[in-house]
Structures are given as structure tokens and as C-alpha cells.
Length: 475
Image (tube, rainbow, N blue to C red; front, side):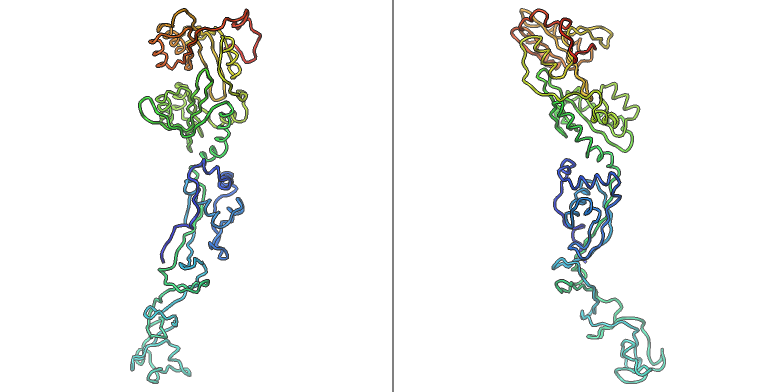
């Protein structure tokens, strides 16, 4: 027999999990397997159908039949979500594709189907060979050729055993030629001209369980969470590093507050056991080379001890399943949806008002303690907690008659660095010198050069004289 496709020809299926989400049927089937409502998917032979078999659990779960059911399980197998194992093999007519075939035996010499099986006797005298029934006559053995009686086995005749004989050409043989008769189109075909089709059973690839459980629900909710906070999210983002290497980041969340642009590198590490240091280190190296200092790692199921220490030291926010659930189900740090509006300010008070509308807690003349132990004064410290990350912006305001010199920019950058504040903004009136601007760009300081700031009305611009704001809390 000739073997055709290993499985029934199916329609082209999606190749990625994001594409699978578009097919609610596949998603529903996987969800049922994750919930153990379906243990395995086995075919059931049904020769009343076109395929010759059905997948009852698929048909019942997602309400599809025939090739559609096969297409779904095969697409999930292609994505390595399901594992496939051989179940059975069915035959098809190569002419009309019918599975209603009947085997028939034929003479290997002349292909006649008129063959008989039985004990073969050979008459020693005349050499006639035939089936025992041909010799039987009134309780005796009479040779049908010479009509002599066969009396003694081993002398008058010999037995060749049970064989077959062709009634058309007289050929004696042991193994007949097998052919198949199609009951639909009546064609008769040799065994090697019949199509063989393998059919399979399917089980969930358990090594993918944690990944699937994240992809099907928490990931969708997490993306919604980020967008609700004003982020634009790119999955499998390609980022050019400072080294020249191109890095792939699972999710890159970007939001331009007008004041600063926040880039958050989000990695997803999923395994059956604890996540080791090597995978955390790889993520940190990619984020560092890409110039991204806000880092979040979704870890399933948990981190190893050494990896957890590394993540803490390198300021990587780790979300294990319990942490992710708190974020997604409305934990205490969950904030309101942020509405974007144009960024503009003519005075310090307008800048503070804008920051508050963006959800920041604002403190003027904030005193922060640096890693060195020194206390530093920051003109404006804006803080926003989003559940997954805390953004802190150090804003320096310098008003002078001449452009700001390099040493003052260096001093501002040094204070922010010692205070572990990575988002830095300088408002310079009337501007910066060329050298100062070059340094600011190199250090990632966002600079606003303005001709002048409007003077504050009496009592404004001083945090102590303002009415209390529920968003402003002492650090």
C-alpha cells in the first residue's frame, strides 16, 4: 500500500498562541484540557462518515465535525501544545477516496479471483494435483484425471498440506495476491495502490501547562492592565542595544507622560520548576544593553534563591503567581485609568498640576537619602506606584541669566544617581551650554529649555502653603 499524508489533510492553522486566541474553538478545547475536563482526545472509528472516524470529545466541546475537528487538533499539535500518538490506520480508495473497501484474494499467477483453499493432494501415478474435494467420490478418493482410486497415502498419493489452487489456471500457491474492491466505485486495486491514512490520539503536552495557563488568561488581563495605565505594549519587541546587538523582549511597555518617556522591559519566564539565575541574568543584560532601567519579570512558578537575590539587587520587580493575582484582581496599589492630555506648562504650579493629573504624588523641595548616606534636595520629586513598578522622577529647576553650566548638570545627575532615581528632568531657564547639553543627553536627562517661567502668585509654588492633596504624601 502507498502511504499518503500522515494525517487527514486539514486546513491551515494558526502558528502562534496570539493567533490561536483568534480561534475561540481551539482556545476552548485547550481550556477544557487544562481544567482536566478532557484527559485525552481519541478517535472513534465511524465508517458512516466521510473520514471514517470522529473525535467525539472535540465535537462535543467545540461543536465542530469532520475535517474541522481534525484541523483544530492538528494546529495545536503543530504549535506543540498537544502531543500526537499513533492510534490506527485506515484504507482509502485512491480513485474516489471512499473508505468502504473489501479485501479479496486472487491467484498470484493469473490474478483470477476464482481460487479455492483446502488440503492439496497429488496422485503419484498421473501427477494430478488438486484440492481434496476434487478427489472425493462416494467415500473414496478417485483421481479426476485418470479415474484411478487412490488407496494408500504415501504410495498412491501424497498430501502437500493446506494450500490454495486457482481454478482458472491450476496454479498451486500458499499466499494469495491481495486486492481491494471499492464498494462505492467498484474499482479493484492492488494493495500497493490503496492509500493508507494514519489516525492519531492526542494528549496535552504537560511541559507546556504553566505557559498555557498564563497565556490563556493572566497574560490577556496583564496586557489590559498596562493599557489601562496608558502604556502602549509591543509583544516580542525587537530592541537595538547600545552594543549593536538586537534583543527580543517579551513585552515592551512604553508611555510618554510628556515629562518623561517610561520604557518598561517585561520578561516572562515559565518552567515546571524553579527559574534559575542564568535566565534572570540574560533578561537583565538585554534590558541594560537596551538602556531600559524599569524591569519586570513574570515568574512561573517561582525563583531559585540565588536568582531572587540577583533580581532584588538589580532592582528587577518580580511577579510570581500570587503577586500577579494581586495586581490583576485589584490589589491596594491598583490605580485609576490614566487619560492622556497634552503636556504644557508655563509655571512651576502648572507643571505640578499636570503631574498630579497623570497620577503622580508630588513633593517640592524633597529631601531624599542617597545610597552614600548623604541627604539630597530635589526641587520636585514625582512618584507614581502602578502595582508592577514605581516611577520616581527627579525634576530640577534652574533659573539664571545665562545658560546652565556643565558642573551644575553634573551635580544634579550625581544627586539623582545617589538617590537611585533613574528618570531625570531638568527645566533650564534660559537653557544649557553645549557641553552641559551633551552631558545631559549622554546621562539620559530630559531637558526643557525655556525662555522664562511665569512667576507664581502669592502662596503658589510652595507645597507647604497649598491645600492638602490626597495624592501627595510624605515619602
